Image 1 (tube, rainbow, N blue to C red):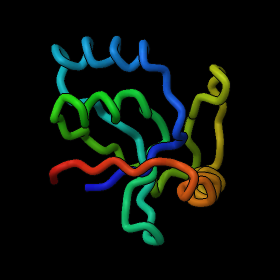
Image 2: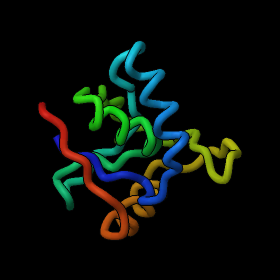
Image 3: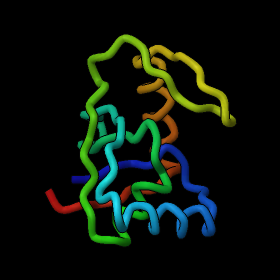
Amino acid sequence: MEIILRHRHFDEQHLENVKKIMSTKGAPKIRAIWSDIYGAWLAVEGCHRLRAAQELGLTPEIIDISNNKTALIQDDGEDIKVKVLDLLEDLTDNAPKSEIISFED
């Protein structure tokens, strides 16, 4: 399974903190949208959790929101409601600038 991260940047200290938490809580649940264009999931959230899962050898559980009309996402620390179709377009456009993480199915 391949997941394209929402963005490439991350904070190393935050990643270490997430890894500590995940080592006891297990694999994360990540909301994502399926992309036929890339044949991969487009992560709506969880860039640090996905990196941590990969480093810990855990496979995340995907919560497929592809058929939802709207989604609540964080943007600059604020929760905002967006149309999933608009979010899919944005994630698809940004995918080439981001990072792909592979997990065992």
